[in-house]
Length: 175
Image 1: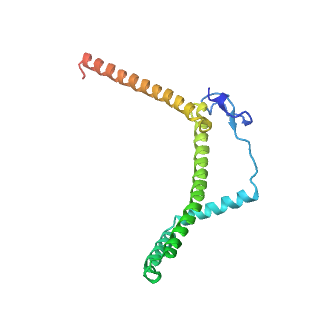
Image 2: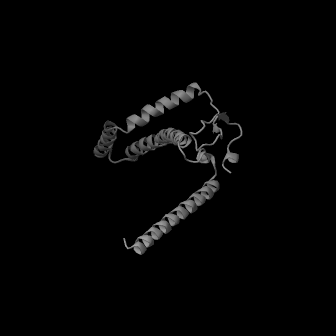
Image 3: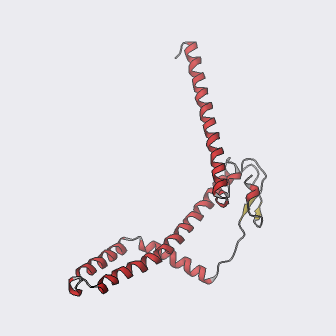
């Protein structure tokens, strides 16, 4: 079911026999696209920016700015302009940080997804779970329900097996 929902324009990477659940099913990957100069520049600025804004000195700078602004209030008579300065500044910074944070999370999410896909590919896990991030919410919920049903069935089977073992020990006089 999942394999048919993959994009049709994907490149196919040959599978490694015995490494991916014993199947010879090829692994589909997204086509590679060379990033442009602006994309590279934005990625580098976002990477450096997101790393730096998470440092203690940036927090201290922001806190210092707010303290200086608050202390300067009486000198400006707590005017509308004085309030507008901090409101405008924080709005602009927040607006830009949204894009910085989103880029950072997209990068992290993509890296984690690639790592998980590789773990699935080289393990005994079912390769059909690769690429689930491309499915719709409804398709994911359907698969989640099936997986939860299988997990419940396995748990019930283990519990029944343990109950049976306990009964045998009682019958044999060991329990």
